[in-house]
Amino acid sequence: MKQANTQRRQLFSGCSFLQMRMLALCWFAYIFAYLLRMNLSVAIPVIKQSEGYSNTQIGLLTSLFFLTYTIGQLLSGLLGDHLRSKPLLVTGLLLSACCNLGCAFSSGLPMLFACWILNGFAQSMLWGPLIRTLSLWFNARQLERVSFYMALSTITGYACSWGLASFLSERLGWRAAFWLPAVLVLLFAALLLLLFRSTPQRPLPAQEHEPGLAAEAPRSLDDPSPVVPRLSLFAYLGRICFPVLFLMAAAQGLVREGVGVWLPTVLTESGYFPADSLWFVLLVIPLMNLAGVLFVQKLLRRAGQNSGKILFFLYILITAAAALLFFLGGSNVILPLILMVLLLSVTYGTGPIFTSLIPFQLSAYGRVSLTAGLFDFSIYCGAALSGAISGALSDGYSWGTVYLFWLLAAAVGLLAAVAWFFFSKRGTAPGSKPAKAK
Image 1: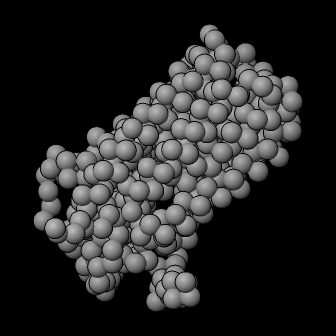
Image 2: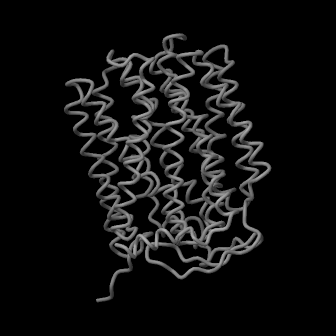
Image 3: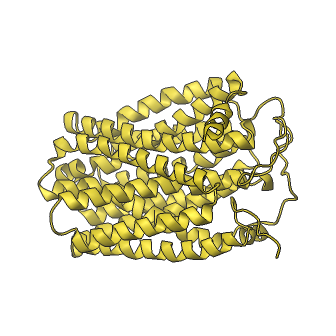
């Protein structure tokens, strides 16, 4: 145990100032990105009250955002492995800020739809290039820790966005929850233009291969070549068993974003939590999400980064929590709140396995941005279904029907996790240990 702690402390001991600066810039970039995407969730109760929109209309709005986000993930993932990250990041942040300004000054539902749909495409230009940048700035041993810090950026982004949007929408009106974050992001984009570097000027030293981590080789500004021969796209997707990963990630996105988008509305409609008191609850939730990330990170260390084993266990937890929410969610408001927070916590802890750990583990194939983009695409395919269907079900039936919908999605994810578990036992999945010869 003492030796393991010493090794973790040494992961960043040899990092240069530029490396730490790049990690900080990437970390804050995604926090600022969340200010421009999670503000809608908190503003929904106020928007419904002041503008008279229904859950079905708002659900369709969130689904169309996720639809353009998923399509954009494929495009930015493919481009991110061939273009420098800086132009993509700055363009994405600037476009997202402009879309939020458009939402703030929208005169009706059509303009709000147009701006928020375009915002989905703008947001899709960020994660893949960020992950590729980090894979070029840090070696394989350091990337394990980097993935953990980037997971914290999403949780911090949630806390900042939900807290700021709740405060602004109640004090200054829902439009302030869009225009003020946009101004802050415009200022940060100017900072990125000055300080961000897509790749290091000198190649990283080669690292010895570690179990559960991708083999690493020197990479430089002009030589981002893969360590192993590049496979064709379809051969690569078959190599990583992507259809199974797609089902798992889509189920995770459907449950996570379904709960994340509709939790404030569920609490407000219950009558126990008025809209002006939600800020306290919404600030506590990210702490639980942090607990989920820390919990999953500890499991990964104990399992030697074996994604198959850990994902199988996590989807058992997700399905069990969704089942309890369906069967016991109608009893009182406190129990559904606890179960939905638990679902958010576990699904948030699961997310970094898809969006950063596995792409880093597969960095030897030279497709880090594409892999991260594919996983984000998968997650938000589920999210796109969740927004519209959950909103329509809540309007036409009840929240109990929505909980059943989330339970079915979790069950699909569990079945895919079983398949991935047996795939990983063959020793071919990322992070799995090679099977011993008989």
